[in-house]
Amino acid sequence: MKINSAEFIISNSDVSKCPKDPLPEYAFIGRSNVGKSSLINMLTNNKNLAKTSGKPGKTQLINHFKINLNWFLVDLPGYGYARVSKKTKETFQKFITDYFEKREQLVCAFVLIDIRLEAQKIDLEFINYLGEIEVPFCIIFTKADKISKTKIDSNIAAYRKAILANNWEEMPQYFVTSSLESTGREQLLEFIDGVNEEMFKNNSL
Ligand code: GDP
Image (cartoon, rainbow, N blue to C red):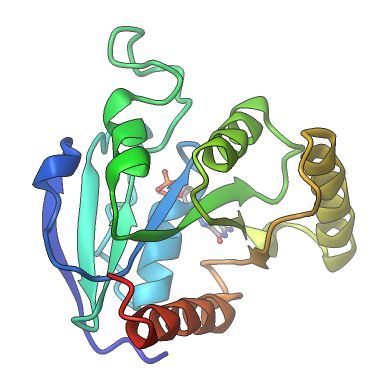
């Protein structure tokens, strides 16, 4: 897929105020600092679309970007950041769970995982939550440029083990990415293109 346009539409913390367009929508979520903004900017070829910031936990909103006029990329707040005060932070904030449970246009969630780290409890909890509410999702491993190919393979093998230990029957579809080197860009956009085609063909939205 070639990116011809990427336009910021709206930010809010209320799923009922998200755009009404019946367009397929892809949500990006992960722990703060996982590299989500960098990935979104890399995917859309736009250095400033999503705000990369030194202050994780800052963007506490659902951000809609319209891509090529026919699908939405949704940038969700990072979860699990300790400096967000207890009051504003439940494990996953209500407006985020509302989004996943109510947003009919959502066709796939991308859960971002830093490829360097061993499986984190909060990510596994979130993956299990998506399973419970039956939202289709893929894993995106980020920052692949930071470790060797061998280490990438062994970390993914370890991740698969952690997923299976959480009662999943198989490893979900996953992508290995580096925003620094644009690794995984083509594969991700191809995947989205394929799902979009299915959605439009079946008139699903
Ligand atoms: P977010 O909080 O999840 O949106 O994360 P950011 O995109 O702001 O990235 C957090 C930090 O990781 C920043 O210092 C980025 O420069 C760095 N980073 C993000 N993606 C990559 C990557 O693919 N490779 C490398 N080496 N660093 C990255």
